[in-house]
Figure 1 (tube, rainbow, N blue to C red):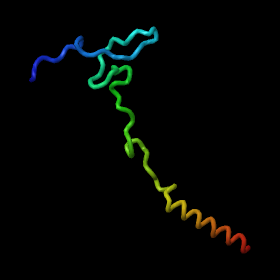
Figure 2: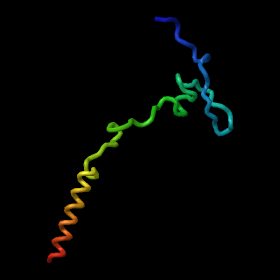
Figure 3: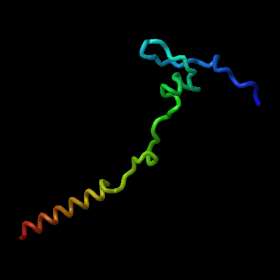
Length: 81
């Protein structure tokens, strides 16, 4: 072990303000300026596929082009009838 754990009294305090205008007295999360209550612990939503932001192919360029071709063919058939 490197030594005794650091004291929370020596940690930097949260910079968030409460409704009365006073600063929050909780210790800030390491590397952030706010505490865990005010958003210091959460890194946010995952990016990319892990958050559901992926394409299913329904609106890909190939599918849109195929739908346009089919619509054009249907229009030609209707015009012939």
